[in-house]
Image 1 (tube, rainbow, N blue to C red):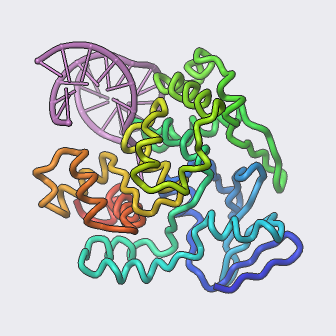
Image 2: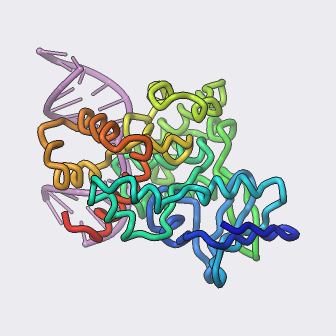
Length: 287
DNA sequence: AGCCAGGTTTGGC
DNA sequence: GCCAAACATGGC
C-alpha cells in the first residue's frame, strides 16, 4: 500500500477497494451515496468523498491527522488475500472472497452502526437506506461537499428528544421507540466507546441491554462498528447459506448455529460472513 | 392476498 | 432456558 497525502487529498495506491460494492451494495453501511462517480457521506462529523482514480483511490478532504482514521475506516490495512488463503479448508469461504475483490469490512463509528442496524430489524435493504437517510435529513446536521448536501446522523442527545410519534409518522414503525430508548441510554452513560476494547462476549452481552438490540444486531454493531472481526451476524441469508453449504449446522437452532459458526471460522469469522452474505444475497453462489 | 426483508420483544410454558 | 406470536412498512 502506497499512501500519499497532499494538502487535504489522500491518495492510496496498491490496494484493492471497490467503493460501489463496499459502500453501496454490501449493506454494511447505509449512509453512503454515489454522485457522478464520487461516493459521499458524512462520517466522523464531517463530509467525505471517495473516488477511484487510475491505479488507486482518492479520499477528500482528509487532514494529515485523519489519514490513519480513514485507513482504518475503509479497512485498507487488512490483507484479504491472506485471509482467503487461511480459509483453504473452507472452499465456500475462499471462493466467496475471490468472487468479490475489493469488498472490505468497514470500521464505522459504533453509534452510527447501532442506529442503522436497529432500523435493519426485519426490514429490507432499500427501506433501511431510506430510513437511515430520513434520520439524518430530519434530525442530523446538514453539511455540503462538491455542492451536494449531506447529513450527519443525529447524536444520542438529539435523538433522545425526538417524539416517538414523529418517527412513526416518518415510517419507522415499531422501531421508533427502540431508537429513542437506546438514544436515551447512550446519552445517559451507556459505555459505547468501551465496547471496542472489550472481548467479543463482554461487548455482546453489554449491547443486549439496549432496546432493539438482539443477538444479530449486536453482532453487526460489533463487526461493523467495534472492530470485532470475530463477530458472526446470522440473518436470514446467513442462516440459509450455512444450512445449505455446511449441512452439519442443520441440526442446530439459530442461536446454536451462530455460536458454532463463530467458533468454526475463528478470528476472521465476521470477514468471512460478509463475503458469504453478499454472494448468497446477490446469487453469485448457488444456494 | 400473502410472503419476505441483514429480528426483537414479550409472554407462556 | 426454549418457543410462538405480535410487531410497521413497502415491494413483489
